[in-house]
Length: 117
Image 1 (cartoon, helix red, strand yellow):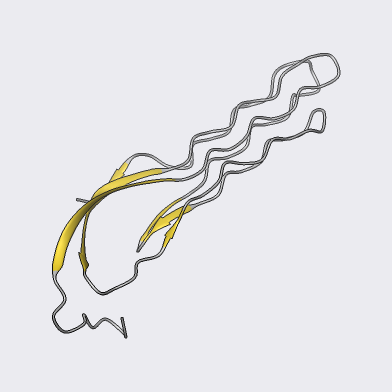
Image 2 (cartoon, rainbow, N blue to C red; image 1 turned 180 degrees about the vertical axis):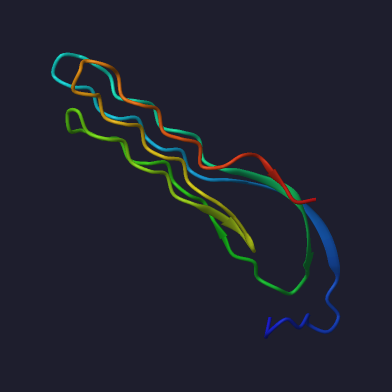
């Protein structure tokens, strides 16, 4: 595709999509077995989009946040996923255990279910 032009003879059609960002990993526990927080899910987007034959559309599958191996460390964020112009953010890693012996905070959500149809 050059610019916004559709190739001659192309056929347009609608596609329902679901794009999910990779989830965040949980945090590591501390030496006294106090747990870190859990990672959050990645953002979810659903909708319908118009596509055309003869055009390549980019797709990226976001991986989940890698596990943490260090004690009392924060979790790792997940990676974004994309389909053409739709992007879903990765989830947030969990919080490390707090110094007062209380479990860490869970990762905050990357985003709500977003429908664009």
